[in-house]
Length: 130
Image 1 (cartoon, rainbow, N blue to C red):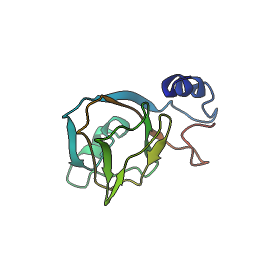
Image 2 (image 1 turned 60 degrees about the vertical axis):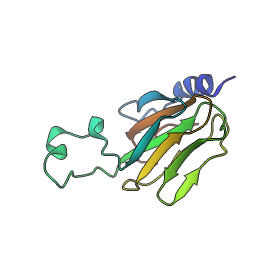
Image 3 (image 1 turned 180 degrees about the vertical axis):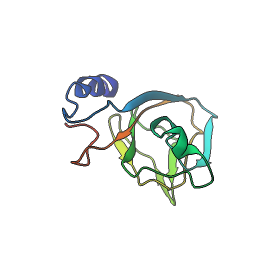
Image 4 (image 1 turned 135 degrees about the vertical axis):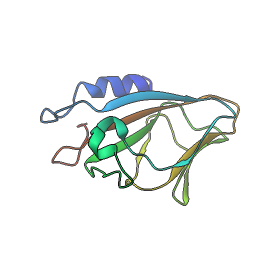
């Protein structure tokens, strides 16, 4: 079973008290592509009012999780703060606190696929149950 089919099966087990399903997207990064260093603002989960002005008020209940859908290949990496994530297997996941600059790049020879989940955590600090 692939990491994507595993995820779709686990989606059926979302926490019942959760008010909304996490936003989900699959990202394809082809050889030579990169996403420059940035800090997420989670605009899809914040009101227009929260997005106005220089403060960009942040809701600390929002979490983003990256799930590898393919095994790591040489040249694939994420930079998160001063650390580099590499060597993953399909199905491995990573998350980090808001405000940490991060970037991705594919300087390898194969496409890299990642499932990105973004949502508000429930009172148990979970986006979904296992």
